[in-house]
Image (cartoon, rainbow, N blue to C red; front, top):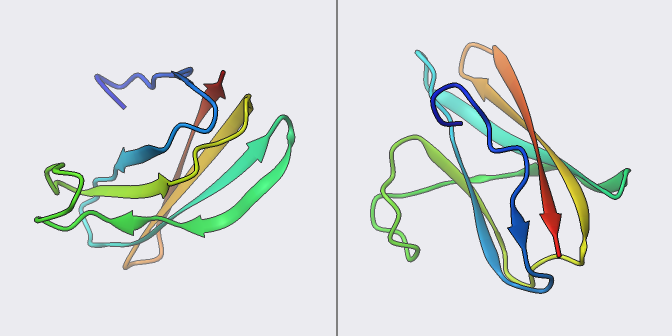
Length: 103
């Protein structure tokens, strides 16, 4: 999210490895972040945990409340809808959605 606006569509080539990074901020400690992904309108990945970026990570990305999932084999050419759910240590959660088109 940038300036309150999500980038709704990003084009990535099929079978291209990519790192999906989301920034999650809260007034409490974030307990977990999971993503659910639909591929072409059908279920693809359900409640898949995302990893918190550590300070010295192999991707050379600053830590700052970021969670990631590495698609090492890339994805097939298709439209994907991502739903991210973050939960804090108090049990509160927030949900955000975006789409990615793989070409």
